[in-house]
Length: 157
Image (cartoon, rainbow, N blue to C red; front, side):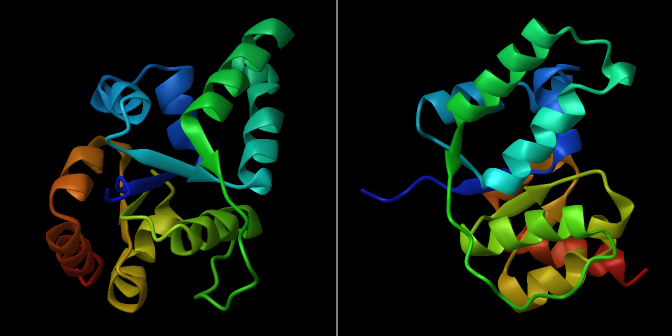
């Protein structure tokens, strides 16, 4: 049996899914729970999500933040990420998501981060990784190579 396709969500994509319930991510939780999709994380990503869930701006009490983190842990597969040389992202926290995605052989990294999105073309060419906004998760799963090419084309504009 083939492993399901893998996605990596950056912290803001996790917030979109768990806290803000972004309608563009409808169906993702069900697809993960039924084994059609896998979400990969590592300890760094979970630590960052835990920290961000505690931000005052989100207005979550400790119980709600812990519940969201528990859902993330239940949905995600935690992987070990070996040391690797990848194109450098200006933000070291964002670099972790690139490393997780490459280590997990993910089809796509879901993000709205402008710096990560600017790296889409290079990551598609060099690692076959689509870096797309969360709203494009279905497209990334349906046609990863065409999404990578489209992302590459967009990054050249």
